[in-house]
Length: 529
Image (cartoon, rainbow, N blue to C red; front, side, top):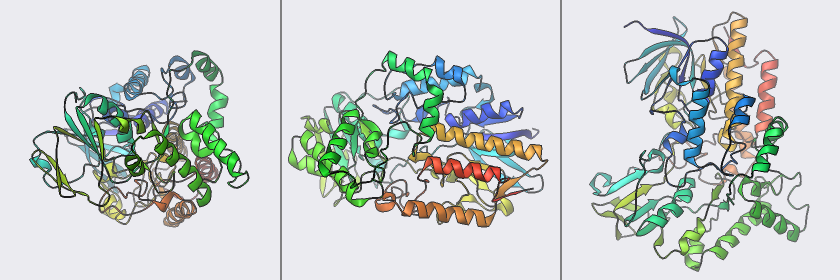
């Protein structure tokens, strides 16, 4: 079979891969997308667990590249649930006829750069062999499920699930004894729903998490009309926010107001709900004292909500608030007031092993019909590391990144020409509203490709000095905040053996400004050949 030639090979058919395909077509380039699942949607295709929904307000969690698309689509809730977001992804794919260039149920197994031809040789588990000038990894930041390797997992006679790989047809827990292992975002969303079904639910918690209420509600038609009439201005305003979102961050440092005023501000934002809570003061992720007051306010709310004082204490985090992605919940803490819900602390006595009938922790055996692993993802690098990616001289990406990911702008890496990592490590990605972040990256990659074509150049990769300086810069920015102060998936701390490196770049507007400056200087820091 003759080797297929394309201008761009794209891995992943989530929001990044779909938009990259759309931009490629607009540039008159040939492109193919490889997708492991049998449909579009990326993280929203796989994360079908009960209660799954976006933590960014739905009116902001959408593409902005096409105004007709913005005007046509209507969201039903303030925070859209997974089925609705998946419908939106399919709506976009159908609107722009994207599916004809997407190969579903096809996993990319290897991508090797051929220095002789200057092209990427991409192979799949379906026998595809494609030579591509550019390789775009749109594999997502939260797409590689982190299934813990518990001893005895194969012995468990019941059913087990991971929130990131939920069965398409759903799961009925009616009348069952269920265990949920983990209390991160997917657990906080799924536990209230599972508790309403299960005969009994036992939650195994290693580290409690902060959560603020969503105060979810149907989208007000008047607000939707106003939003759509002002989309252009609102989108521009959102880009000025540190996370690419519209919620207000007051331009006031901690300590500029009396404590009573601060607590009133936290209370006001608690009633609004969502991420705006951490915008009460501009420096809550830098100032330890202010952060502790913000954290204690949430802990007081947990104690006020949960009836049993011992359970409430276990649910109160002691870490910095915001060093892990803040969770947005719907009835999470109230769930622990149910008679059919128990909480087990495994921070000092980890799970020893799974058994045929359940698990053992702290020397005590628990029996279950089903176990749910809400253990998150091998974030940002996990999906990349599962593919045999090799650059110049056959250097494996896993080898280059053995001590942690090294990139220039979170987008490119030395030794891997024409390889683009959409929302990769070293870019704002998971600290932001992912949709505008994805669009900014895809637009930047498209501009680079256009620049190469205009100037008769074939490859681009970073200079070593530029990459080193960028890694140092990201570390310096993150090190000046409270982000690295706790063991989070931002650091890869949830995956045994993964190097501890703070991966995202804090600050969307500063990042965009830097990208523009580099482009204006003829792609300074890049080697174009």
